Image 1 (tube, helix red, strand yellow):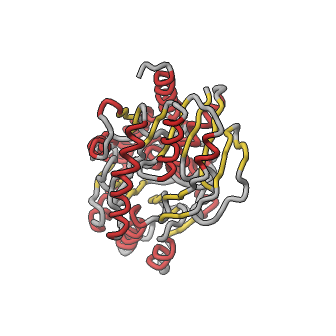
Image 2 (cartoon, helix red, strand yellow):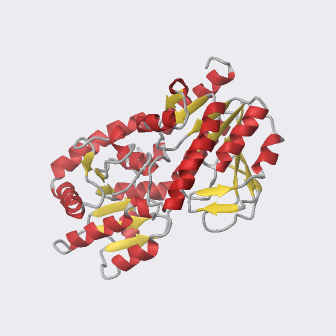
Image 3 (cartoon, rainbow, N blue to C red):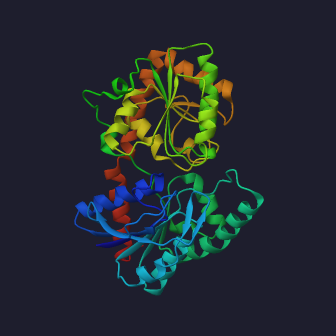
Length: 383
């Protein structure tokens, strides 16, 4: 099978969508399929010099981007020319409402190529200006309407998305629920884990792992940490992730706290797995979320979770089976639940066991197989 993925960003750029595409693409290459990724030359900070390359068997085509929209979108119309030169068995576009999704959908329609679209849960407001909200609304009413119309199937990563997909023109019979996944390395206990030793940490670790973006709530994590550290000095709070506008604020908020540690982004999966397995509590204090990969990684690692009950999250985890829900911005409650999980070892062990079991449903091998079966059914015109 010859597969094309259309996505705004790709490896080495760090992000959930980028990781999803990479996981699928590299698995399918190993199975003997030919996979191409069409993306921009933007890594959210600067241009990537190499435009055409093969990484782990995946053919990558990077295009000059002419416009950056915030930190999450890139417009690269030359995709139209490049994509039109190839013949694929299936085209799979990623993230609703973006120009590259429209371009990919248009070529699929012109060339009569089966089309899959994964929305990736973009429906929340975030902290956008009035102009930003208007632009997003218009893109949903135009780009989404066309891409949904041209798609053979629309993949929603959580049932929470279904009303939004229907609102913007997606037919219910086209919608398929396939969540994001988690790699096997996060399930397996790592021997001789030296993560804490390298950082010279002996205390329990409370972890924030994700993009330092306003919607992810890293500042709320720091505020809760500071409240806890007023009473307890035997806890370390670890912040790890790429900067998307919040690093300076996080540094300023935590500048007088030696027990709040900020690390550079970690790309190596084994080191990420070591980080999870060295931690005691995972905190996701987001204003909005789709279905973040870190949630499944934390589950597979057996970490108790404290998260905001927003968007797709309550569809995948439960309070108190997998941890606790705390409303966005409730610093006192965040403090209470973190301390409860650190102090009640029996409760933490019970949740850890629940989370490891639940994570088995999200093994990337299972998710990739479900996605590939969908491709095959569409190509064989069974859908």
